[in-house]
Amino acid sequence: MGWGPDRWRFYRLVGHEAGRSLRAVAVRATSRPSALARLRPTGLVIAPQDLRTSDATIAADIYAGLFVFAGRALATGGRSPFDFAPPSAQWGEALYGFGWLRHLRAAESALSRANARAFVQDFMAGRGDQALAQRPTVVARRLISLLCQSPLVLEGADHAFYQAFLKLIGRSTRTLDRALRRGVLPRDRLLAAVALAYAGLCCEGFEPVLRRGTRLLHRELTRQILPDGGHRSRDPGFAKDLLLDLLPLRQSFLSRDIAPPEALLNAVDRMLPLLRLLRHGDASLGHHNGMGATAADQLATLLVYDGALAKPLMHAPHSGYARLEGGGGTLVVADIGPAPPPAHSAAAGAGCLSFELSCGPQRLVVNCGMPATGEEMRELARTTAAHSTACLADTSSCRFLAPQPGLIHPIAAWLKRRMGPIVVRGPAEVTVERGTDPAGASVLAARHDGYVPTLGLYHERRWRLHADGALLEGHDGFLRGPAGRGDPVEAAIRFHLHPTVRASRTGRGVRLAGAGAPWLFEADAIDPVIEESVFFAALNGARRTEQIVLYLTAADGTQVAWRFRRLAE
Image (cartoon, rainbow, N blue to C red):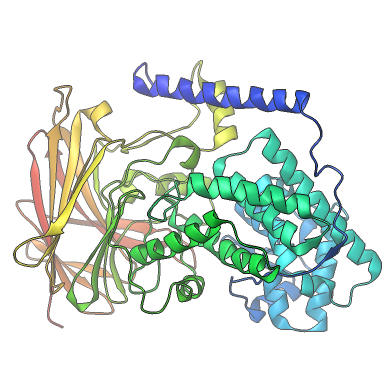
């Protein structure tokens, strides 16, 4: 990391985490036992709705012993899936989260109910990777899933199984309570608060759990949901998943004739319009800061709650996203935000000033997106080169935490285990201007300082989308930073293309052909190059695609103009 600002920032993170660990130890040593330590539910009173789409055909795969999660498959050959080592951490989290029970419920058969009970019984017997199963985020997800799918699991069950199921619910709430007292990352705290509120509402005799969950929920939603509806992580996927939990939770409060917390109502009202900002014409979300493949049915379900005629936000200044709309369904979604705070940045990408372009249901320019699994691919997907923006000196505008050789290695490894591969340094100052010019075109301009500490250059970008949507004009510029540096560096301005788009050279431009009208890309004074790329966020796994690249030498005052023009079909 060198002896520059990055190292001192790194040590501040170490000090913060060490202090939090010591405070957690002090709390455990001096505080009285939690009020939830011996609490047991006496019965279930409601089962919240699960808004995630279920598929009875997946239930058939489960009957056959085929478990497909997070892009990986495991065939059990008639044995329990808990008898196998998970093929990936993400696969294991999905298995132990039990969200897949909803597919068995969709089958609506005695066989599916018996299978569900058998799987839950296997887990209650202690089978499987208990270290993975007891991670706070997995426990929270499992608690929510079991409560939502309790009609499936408990219909036809005997008294002994019912009591064991209640014990599992009680044990899960105590596990979450202990994890919260030890200290967990903010996203885990928020999900744990949601799960505790679910348990308090669904179970008899759990009034203390409901009070604790409601209190935590109010605090964490107030802290983590920004005024424009984004989450502090800037991850659209996390916001979508959170809403899928918050909407049934709101209804569960009403079902119990209990007023939902004000923070819950406010969060839902703010988050839905932000999802519309990020939504393209093909019903998928933009691939920014950890967003992978979009389950379009889930997104459609959520947006029903916002009203069919609701309009999206056009600018989310706190979350750092902007939307430009033109005629013919042309749409630009741009990332114009700084790096998230370190504790929220384990999935964030170095994609400041990247954008995605679509025309109706046809996606044209994209970011590579986050793959469902594979640590190396996930690291690659977070780099600046995996985004449709300018990359200087083949480096990223963010510095990610990774163990380094030498003295700092054990400390970095410890911090990475605690917080994940967080952003140690990234764009901190992003200035934004937007408006409409006299010709009626939508204009957005932004500048970030992500490369100033290392290369001494600001990157600025300007988008101008004509009112008819037939022309997007872009402009990239580079300016010397305040320290007076700014030596020339090699740069690449990348435009990653969606896999359904085919690029071909035509004169000094690139013709883009897809499902809709063709487009033409041109740049002033630079011949574009077509290269291979990869789209990580496809529903069926990573897919080959192409990218347009402008190679140049960037220095103080360097300017590059480019444009995408829609052609007649």
